[in-house]
Amino acid sequence: MSETSRRDFVRQAASALVAGTLAGCGRAHAAPAPANILSFDVGALTADGQSRVEPEHGPDGAPILVVREAANDFRAFSMQCTHEGCPLNPPAAGKLTCPCHGSQFDLAGNVLKGPAAYPLGQYHTRYDEKEKRLTVVFG
Image 1 (cartoon, rainbow, N blue to C red):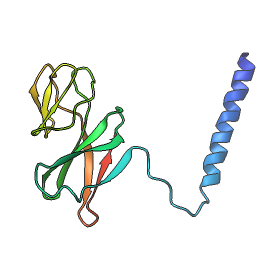
Image 2: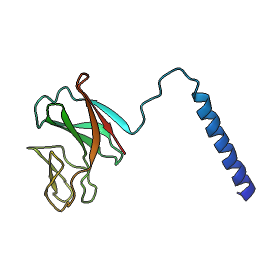
Image 3: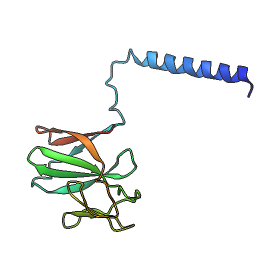
Image 4: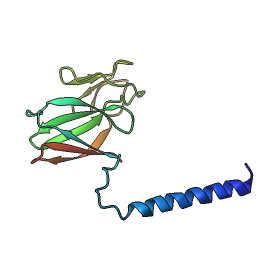
């Protein structure tokens, strides 16, 4: 592809992007939720220490672990081992275990047993008490 045709391609692509963005400004419907936010119904987590693995995946491609720490206090973690990135097994007896090398984590994301040296990745959360929903924000 010659330099002139590359330049024309980039110019046309940029024009199409701007035109599409401006065309969407006049729409009356609500914008979809950004891809970096997920929301979960946590009404079933009624006791401190309860957890569940959500089927949706975080930005690292791993499922999300939601833990109720106390009333109105929830945490969300990546289910990806910090040692070499293997997917963790679901919690059993209050521990998450990596099937690849045996690292273990508690439900607060802390390392209980190596070789992992770092805690689980934790996501920012907001809890809506009225709706019993936990919003997880990535990035």
